[in-house]
Image 1: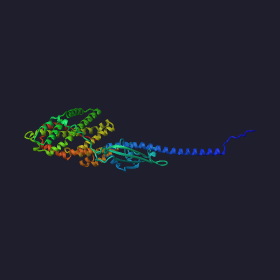
Image 2 (image 1 turned 120 degrees about the horizontal axis):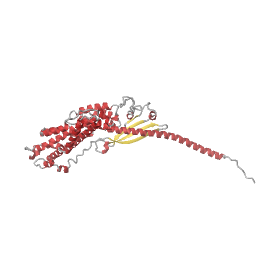
Image 3 (image 1 turned 180 degrees about the horizontal axis):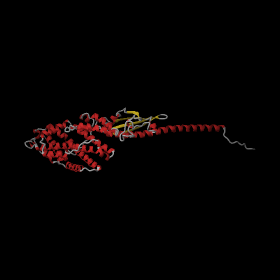
Image 4 (image 1 turned 135 degrees about the vertical axis):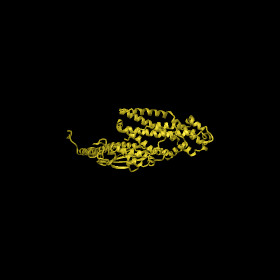
Length: 466
């Protein structure tokens, strides 16, 4: 019996099943290709958004570093913030990117932005929009650390090939809204005062107001220790040595820069130490002024013994003179290193640190009762700083515009800056009364006073501005 033989090939059922499977696979391949295209578009845009976000974060850090009110100046403070395209100069963060033509080192309004002259970048980001807002973690005035911190939101959105996309980032930014704490505990600690002869001397007098004796002892101890202490003596000696080297007229600009920088830092430290003394003694002086009389002094400090408290008042006045004189000395030397050829000795970052320190010093001088020209000098400095920063540093330029509004008068300026507000509280109208009280109660115009004051305030260099 012959076996039945089959011809090679597919049955109809097998062919149908095969075609069906091929169709399914083909559909999957086409869908995968389309999905890959969409994902590639999304990935490219998202990566671009991340890069642009990093640039905005750097700009915001620079803005708030120079100007604590910078987010308000930019119009991004609060829940709404900004929302704009990033090309053709629409967004402030993308308008100072490149110095393309002369005058060099100054970006004109017609350059520095992303426009059709910057291909292919322009095509890549033309559909991008930027949204920025910033809000403090806690309202100012509450005394919590969170009031000094902003949470900033940055959103880049775009139109994709198939659907819109976005890239969202958040960052924290430090911008002080409260005054910096002044550490004075060590200066007026009971242990330190008990070891001071001037303090214990006042505690030995009886018959008067014990609280008044205690506060006058503090003034005598802290003021006298500063005026006749090694810190001030060594600082004055070092300053004199550095000034002598400057007066030799060296042509080595690096050496000249170093001398001025050392002098600026040295005098600033003298002013800082002086301020700490004045700040620590503020409650003591207030109590003394409110309760000072022959009755409260008792027999030990009257009847020919007035010199015992007069010398304390004289020393306190000298601490104030050292504060003002050292500030002016520091300002003059900082101005030197950010001006002319000396400004080229260091990089931009170092120079801007010097400018910010100058701004702080100018602000303090505006609220001192014995320096009435302080506000006018600061206004003139801001005008020159505005000319200097235009086209060079947009952050500094925006700061100057806002600071000019604040600097209409000293009280308004102090109200905008927490640290200055605290300094103004001590050295405003109140301290003019303090100086008047010392003047009437103290024969302070002796040779010792004159020589000490001359050591601190004389020979202040001529002011220069950047």
